[in-house]
Amino acid sequence: MRKWDPDTFNQTDFKLEDGISNQNRFRTFTLRKVDELVGYTLDGIRAPSLNRHSGKHLEAMDYHEQMKQKDTVIIDVRNAYESDIGHFQPPKGGAQLLDPKMRTSGDFPKWLNAPETKEKLKNKTVMMYCTGGIRCERATALLNQITDAEEDFKTKEVVMVRGGIERYLKTFKEGGYWKGKNYLFDKRMEQAPSDKTQQALDADVESNCCLCQKKHSQYRGQHKCATIIPSSGLPCSVPVIVCNDCQITATNEPLSLSCPLCEQNYQTPDTAPDLLGQKRKLGLIAQGGKDLVTGQKVKHAPHQSSQRLFVGKLPLTMTASKLREAFSKVDLKIETIQWIVDRDTHAFYGSAFCQMISMEDAQKAQALGTIQLSTKKKRKQKACVAFSPVHDNATWPEASYCETEYPPIGDC
Image 1 (cartoon, rainbow, N blue to C red):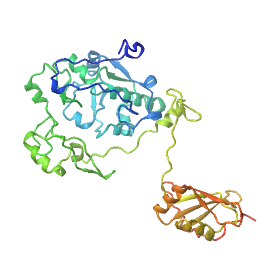
Image 2: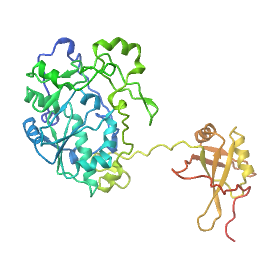
Image 3: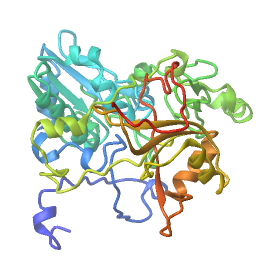
Image 4: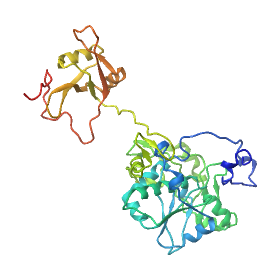
């Protein structure tokens, strides 16, 4: 690959692994394009720039030494179920370990944006680590963009270990400050320090079988948490640990399985950082919505569905009865009509808000896009239709509102 494209691949950190059994090897080499390599829900123009904001790489030896330092925090940017079977354990008096308690990578930006998290990171050297280093590239860039954009939130430095946990364990073959196993997403399942004794590995186990609570540190059987998350109404679905003795019970009673986060009733923070707003503040998005670093453009979100519609291009002679009649000809029913008037003159200028009798009717009208109006003119006149959701915490129509047959003519 370096011969084929030296400009691209001479700087690539390839990882080579020897001695893997045939059953655990990758069968094929697959290359495919994706919108986002790590599922932080920061795809496209929302993604922080790696060129501008990526953290500093430390070799494993330097990363090891940094864990001894005060005024330092170390963040595990992997999912909580990965951390359960292994994580860094800095020495006493050294870095403080922080676990974001992520069910999925999409939780990380929300955790990082929480005020209590920022308080722990403020004016500290922030270390991050993950399995092989890829997630840290995105995570460090995200943090650096946030601190670059927010005047009252700064860190000393943001660093990551080059090559991730995998490279660290190859450097410190007896484990160093690593405790437990490194969760892997391939057929090897996990990685342990090569020179660490089985007795020492057993002593490191902190995780338990989710059913019998016996110490156990292997994910086998593809069992998942069945607890319903209140905010989404969906099952948690993160992998859970089930020991060998409980495999049959877990298979027969899948609804009884619950992960440690759900057992703690842990809820992910719900506010993500305004990354587009930060990029605009930093001058990274030009007028017109173009990202000056990546060249991508802001994609406007589709209109949110709502039972209230905006209806425009109405003739000034329109009445409530005529408007209802026009909608009824396509089997749609209006519940409430509010004429939209000029802020200064209070005169009707050809637009209205219409509350439909049902969401189904509103969606049908939106799909049509226009409504044919009944007029005496030979030229057929159409009104345009679009969703018009009511703003959060707003009440519409107001309790005192009274619908009128004719639009207001304004101040006399």
